[in-house]
Length: 497
Image 1 (tube, rainbow, N blue to C red):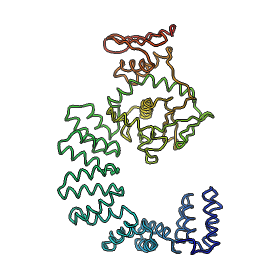
Image 2: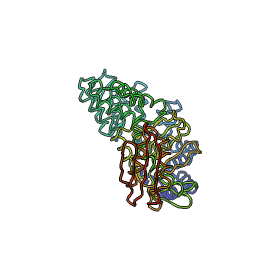
Image 3: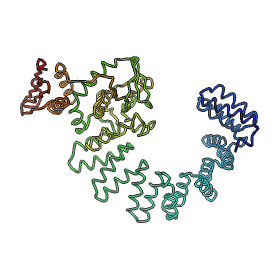
Image 4: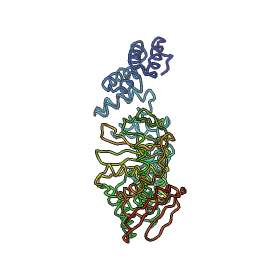
């Protein structure tokens, strides 16, 4: 449909309506769309329906979609057909899908094909899929592949051809099914290649399938890599169980316990996270003290697109969105695993450094998209501790959080703004910071002390009974240990500082 076939007055009214809508004047746009439709521009009815839907008026939107559909607007016929199909009136859905298909609407053609396939009319369904494919719909090629495949009993060569076409256009399901076809054809190498491709296209079952096949082949290293990805990217609980089995077989009880507990709610961090976080804990607590004092407790407003956070009348830049905690199911969600954000979103992209560090050092808490923390005594505090430890990898000023969704969740930001104060070494707070960090990560007090001293640029002297930090300004910090490794005394000499 082109504007040339409609009355000029109706075309002008619709253009004015579109302009008003773009500029945020919805009440004016709504009235102009009505006038344009009544003046003879049926597409304005579809525009009005779309706008009403965006403004929460579903009933009004459907009414206008129906009016536009009966005037021959393909997109409107598709919308109404979809609603009829959802409501169970398949005859009416078919009629409307046919209206949409006659107008060349790609999704109308595809959905009509699916409806007819489900009725057993394969010849017309396949013809419709070919039409939709010619219009660029990868799902149509997938459906053709599935029909030819016939669960491994059909024409596997044609099935592979159509699956391959769909996969070339980014259809992960087609790449995954292609792997099954290659297996049925006896080509295991091609099967693995297809599943690797499906995994890259984010198919939820591909990484797990690869983990199983590599394990069957005796390649434990590759099996672990792919099973990790199945858990990290898709939360695949069976993959976590397989990892636990592998680590148990290797005698690694700590890893086995972590992966076995993971699907049911962690009650403790992994030893690898404890090692990483404990080393930087005291310095991270210091950064948080300084940041919290600077920001206060005012209401928080944030803009992830601009990477800004506003509180107390001041706006801070360099914001990274770390993740969020659900107070409903006690789970942590890294922002890169949040479906509302892309990995390359300005406020999310810096977090790739945290995920990469986790992969390099085998710290699962930094690589798994969603973590159930319900086994911890205080899951919210466990999430906060994890966010602060991860934020330390980004440098900057520390982590700030606020409640969202009426208190149902908390969102965590890392700040890196030069206008915020720097947490410089403070000899008066050193003992408190180290002891607080050891309370959180008690397994290795020496590591906590060592990490704190080194963080502030001190030379370090370490013996069996003590660790001494010698700072550039002459100040010395000495931490003495008992025979069992706990702290006996902390001596700080601020007089020389």
